[in-house]
Each structure stands twice: as structure tokens, then as C-alpha cells.
Length: 352
Length: 63
Image (cartoon, rainbow over all chains, first blue to last red; front, side):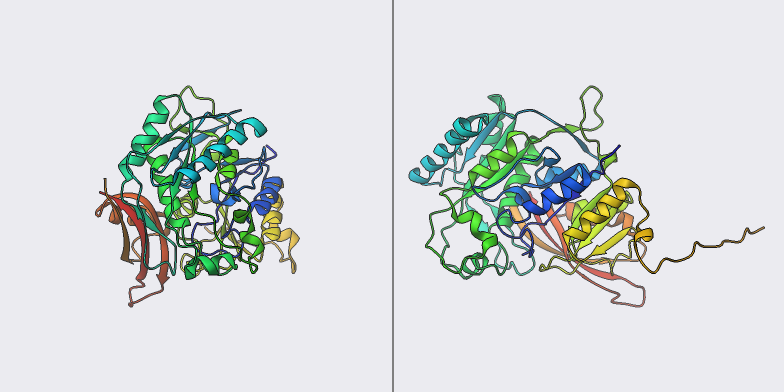
């Protein structure tokens, strides 16, 4: 088997130097997918606002489902096309809603994506940010039931994947937003975005992803290139629809009659930023003895292998090195054979 | 359903092996609600002679 299925995680809302902005880990995902032949990653790695890309070697899996995959609870099944429904937060102003609907129409007419229908929530989702996002941005929505009910409605109409667009508070002048746009700090909204999509994944068990609805913001000449993808258009919906268009189906395990494209037992490695070893997928991977490739990628957390002493962990300086490790694993090459100095093999004595 | 953001501080005793850490954390989170999202965001080495580590977990729970 000339693939080495690998999970690639850039945790949301911890200010990663690579991947903490607007789809700025997408080139890295393409590199790792090329090396592994099979990469499983989550929407915020792939979603660059208006920009995104499909790759036949990448499975686009929402974070909650990705954790379940790592735990061995689900498998993935390739599909040619998902039938996408969109949930719009009823707090979205009508002009912005129209912009989003035009994006959906454009994705149908220009990209051939099957965007089937949409629903507007009965109540506003009402986003509330955590006051302290120094370690990880987070928050909640006050009306989760209205979100889930909307998703159920779409499923009943035959939709197989769900995009969610929530109205986020207009804080374009806030300190957090400005330093994020200039390439510093933590994406202030990504934590709540994760909560929204996790709720749909947990409740409805379908592929899903979230795009925020924000009012247009003032031009910033100091914009960091990593945040630029979010400044191109009126919405962030295109990348979500592109990602979901052929996201894999979620197959609950054990599955007797389903065709499976990727079983969790096939996964060999997890690539994760150094310091971010405290997530559920990584801990589940450790339980299974997977290779953990910990990449220097500056972020707010310091949960390192110093505290775990997990033997099957490789610390590397960048994602180019991570790709090399994955290639070696895929080809069954002893990593020690590549490094210098090269130690002699051990000599054991047979005990009585 | 109502969501809440919580910071949970847990002592990680040496009797809990690394392979059981995830289940240990989830068992403690489940006492507070249904788990939507969580991660260890802080960890400190031995705070006592028994080698206990101190964990900080950030979570979103549903009740």
C-alpha cells in the first residue's frame, strides 16, 4: 500500500504562525498530502475565505468528526458529490444574506457544486465570546437548539452536507481583530466557529463547515499576507462550499454493509504543532501508538512531549521536514539510516 | 440545550498512564455536562513528591 494515511491538525484559535490565519496552511496540506498519499484535515486548514482548492489526496473532515476518526469511532467514505444545504443565522442582515445566496448560486453555476437549499434559523444564534482568549479563542452560542433544528430540517429535505453561516458581532475595530489582520495574535472568532460546527457534527453526523458573516471592514494597508484571503470578497462561503462539495461521508463503526474508503486503523501518523499535544485526536493517536510528528509552529500553547515522554514522537523544525518523515514512514525507511552519526546495532545477551 | 465555557483544573496523578489520560479527562468533564469541545491548554510538571501534574483544560459543555 503506497500511502501513509496522516492526520494534519492545526488547532483552531491558538495563533499558529502557520495555519492560524485564513487558509494559510493549505499549501502545507498539499505538501503533506503529496508525501502521504492520503491526508485527513479539517476545514480551517483548507478554508481561505474566497480561496480554496480540492486535492484528491485530502479528506476534508470537520474537527469533531476528525477526533472521532482518530478515536476509531467512524470511518470515511469517498463520494463524488455532496448535496449541500446552508444554514443561515437569522441575525444576518438581508443585504449580507443576499451576498451569500449569490455566492451559492455562483458555486453552482461556475464550479458545478451541488448546493441544494438553505434554511434560516428561527432564532438568532447569538454568539458570545470568551473574555479570556490568551491561550485559545473560544465562546458559545446562546441558541444551539435553533441551529440543530435547522440542520435537521435540511437533512429531512435530502441534504447530505451542511454549511453554516453565523452572524458575528461587528467588532472590526477591536484590538483583537486589528492585530489578527496584521499577523499577530489569535483569530478571535475561530473558537466559536469550531463550537458551531462541532454541534452539527455531533448531533447530525454529516460533513459540515462554518463560514462567518461579517460586515465589510475598512482597508488595512498593513494587512499580513496570511490574512489576505479573507479580504477578497464579501463572504467566506466559497471555500466552505468547495471543501464540502466532495467531503467524505461519515460512516459509523462498526459498519457491516457500507463501503469504506478510509478505516481509522489505516492511519499511521498525526502532524500537529509543537505545544499543541493536548487535543483529543493527538491523545487518541498516542493510545494507538501512532507516529506523532510535532512541528515547530509558534502558538500560544506549551503542551509538549516534555510532559508525556511519548517515545513515538518526532520533533521537527518545519513542515518540509515533516513531509520527509512521512515519506520515510510511507516507504518503510528507518529514519536512523538517514541521520548522522549512525549508531551500531545493539547487542543483547540471552538471559537464562 | 444550554452551552457553557469552562476552565477545568485537574491533577493528573502518576497512577493515570498517558494512554488513559484522555478517558480520565473526559470522565471528569462529563460530570459537568455533555462535551462539545475540549483541549488541554496548560500543563505543569510535578507539583508534589508523587509526580502529580497539573492540567488546565478549556472546554465547551452542553447541559
